[in-house]
Structures are given as structure tokens and as C-alpha cells.
Image (cartoon, rainbow, N blue to C red; front, side):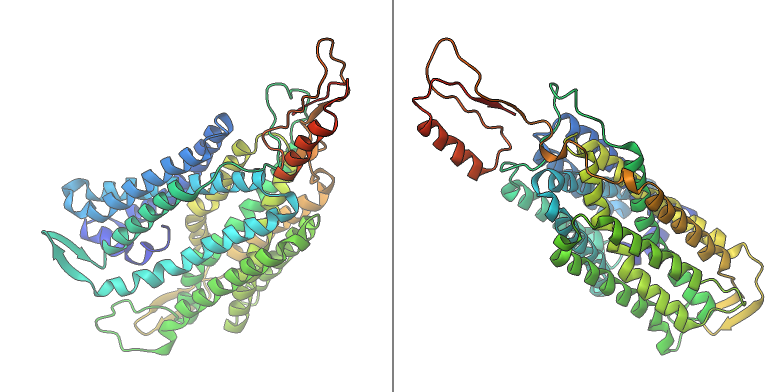
Length: 474
């Protein structure tokens, strides 16, 4: 939903006579919607914990409508650019809802030692979707036809593809998403008022880590092509119709593709080795942050020049290790929340994650252009102008990642699982006498694993003639 429309978004808006500032607003609207969707769905899931499927379907229905109106926006007259803006907002809203519900569902249905694995698999699917978006959108540029008077071309066809995907997701979720089964996180309820609240210092540090992960992604996705174009002359021609082909024009796309593959490789690696990270989440997060600090320091042109080989190496390292902290960070946060309701905290998490994607691109450009340039470039048919200095852009990012790294180490004692664990709200009252009858009544909680239920049902037979009353009430 995010990447398939990006290559053609500007041509599509240009048809509607929109400005470049409006383009920036449309791009930012997706991330704003993502944050709003995460926050609202988290609140609703916390209030209605038995309705994750309905919440998912609601968000996906908005996604379907958003894709439909995006595809037909050009036919809606003067309101067309604003329809695109609203459509991208609710497409992001759909994505924020999905992420929050899915991650909360993982936190409550997956054993803690496997949550890093599952979170990494979700991240791998997301990265695959981001990579497939432009790949699916490229062949659509050759389309130019009319069906019943409705024009379909390379600019609005990505919206139609997105519409098909959203409908498929809605149907698959409706048919196969199962909300029943065992639960490994017993949520706090009205009779669990004695349970401790999650450690807020630990939660804030987890939010900072997730912010850093998304800041790294925003930097790699948005400012890298600009830096590559202005420093080395890599990238597409300003006017493709008059441009002669040069292999360097493909370097930026090749670099972004390689970075996407490395990020996917880390996600796949974590999906198989995530169990090894259990109880070692802080080490994984620390290593990822150390690499982020190092590559940003390496990209500072302190001598007035940044060699291309160093820039490329740092980018690839950042793409590979930058996503290392995502799965362990979310799993660690889930452990800190413990038996308290997960959804509201997860909603806030994705709001925090959307912030760098909303404001990052604007801030990155300002930090790149602020220092006074030393040289002037004339890359034929690609870029002509001042060669920007990178020390402020990457230096600020290095400082920020260093602050997160220090926070993780300083508040290490707060980054521990909730003292109640995953069964903190389980209350057991054994051998309680009964005055009126002989027998055994054993009531298992709704989240009791099936094997335990079978054992409990067997106990009724074993102790059926006992003169005790046993009540396990969770």
C-alpha cells in the first residue's frame, strides 16, 4: 500500500495540477493515517479484546474504499487531488490498524520465547510487500486502455492493483482469521486491580528504540536517493525523453534494491533464529544501535568529501542491521507490559513509529542543505548545482542513535518482564471446603492451553469421590 503508488504518485498529481508541496502532504498523509489508525485501533482493541477480527475487517474495509477512490480520483473534477490526499490517509489508517491488531494478537497468543520470531516474520512480510510494490508498478506503465469509458493507465493502475490486494486481504481474513485458541498472556481485568502497571521507564525506552528503527528506515528510503544524486550523479535523468542512457542512472535503484534484499534477509534470519534472542533482546537492540551510530559517523564528510564506496558500504550495513532491533524491541515491550492489556500500548507504539516517517523527509532535506557547500557539480542530464555537505545530516542522526543507546544501557534494569509474568492474574484457591455437596468442580480459564484442559478434566474423574472442593478461577 505504501510503495506501489510512490513511483507514479507525482505524475498522477501533476495531472490534477497539484504542487510539489501538495505532493509532500500526500506522502506524509499516509504516515499520519498510520499513526491515527494505530492509536485508535489500540484503544478499541483494549476496550473490546474479543473483537480483533471485527477491528481488522473494519480497517481493511477502509483500505478497500481508499484504493477505489484513489484509482478513480482523476474523474472527480476539482476535488481530485483532495480525494487522493484523503485516500492515502485512510490507506495508512488501514495499515496502522493491521499492525496494531496483528502485533497485539501475537503478544497474547504466542509464547514469549517465540514472539521475536513471529514479529520478525511479520516484518519480513512487510518488507517483501515494500519491495514488491515498485516491481508490480513498473509493468503497469505500459498500460493505456479504456473499459466502459474508464481510463486505466500507469498512473492510476497501481490503485486498481491495490484494490484487488485489499479485497483479497479482507476475504482471507474473514474466512481464516481465528481468534480462538490458547492465550499466553492473561489480560488484566476488573478483579486484577492489585497488578502492577508496566514499568513506564522501560516502555519509554522501547518507544525510543522503535522510533529509532523507523528513523533509520526513513533515512534509508528518502534521503539516500537525494544524496546519491547530488554527490555522485546517480539516478534518473531530469528529462528521460532527451536523455542518453548511462549505466550510472541505474545505480540508485540497484542500491535501494540491494538494501531491501538485505533488510529482508535480516527479517528472514530473525524469523528462524528469533528463539535464540529470547532473554537476549537487549543485546540485539544494543548491537543494532551501535551499527547505526557507526554508519552515520562514517557518512559524515568531515574532510569535505565522502567516498562513494564508504557511502554504499554504510548504506548496506544500515539496511541489514537497522531492522535487527525491530522484532526484539517489540517482544521486549510485550514482556514489560505483561498481563496488562497490550493493545493500547501497541497502538501508541505505532503512533511513535509513524512520527519519523511524517517529519523525517522534511528534516533530512533541511539538514542536508543547511551547511555551506564547498563544491559545485555538473552531472550531465542528472544534476547541476551545489554538492551538499553531509556532516550535519548524518551527525545529528548519530547523536540521536547514541542517545537511544545510552538510554538502553542506563535503564537496563527497567527493561525486564513484568513481575507478574504471563500468568500474573491467575488466582488459585485450592482445597476450599464445601458445606453442601461432595464432588469436584474445576473451572479452567478461557486461555488455558488445551493439554492442560485435558488434564483438568481427568482430575474430575480421579477426585470425583473426594470430599474436597477445588476451584481454580482465573
